[in-house]
Length: 124
Image 1 (cartoon, rainbow, N blue to C red):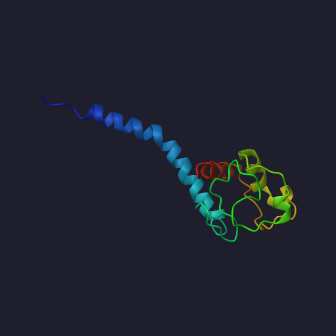
Image 2 (image 1 turned 90 degrees about the horizontal axis):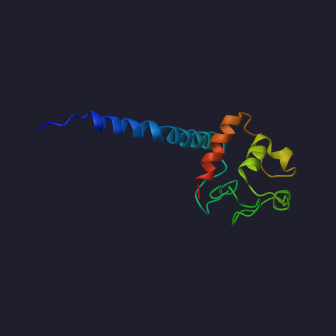
Image 3 (image 1 turned 120 degrees about the vertical axis):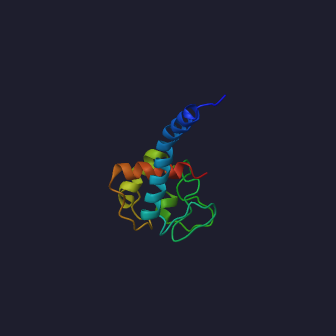
């Protein structure tokens, strides 16, 4: 008896469709991170560059990545990096934390901010 490949193919296509949006969002966030952030930051735990490691940044209090020398403004900000706070910060870092060492002007496109924040949220 010969079995048709259609059911297997259908399941494969269904899996592709089901998982593709998350994969695309992950890829978009990583691409945006590389474009805007990777010059100064990494998502590798414990590896600081010009800026602190962003590994585990979502949920972390500002100014607390081990081994990084933060500005007093950042250390004393009282901010916890929630997704909402990251969105506000990445829009205009100096407006949210006057005196921050971060020289970046911000990510103006809200979809780009959302994608990079989703990517950072996965870096645990």
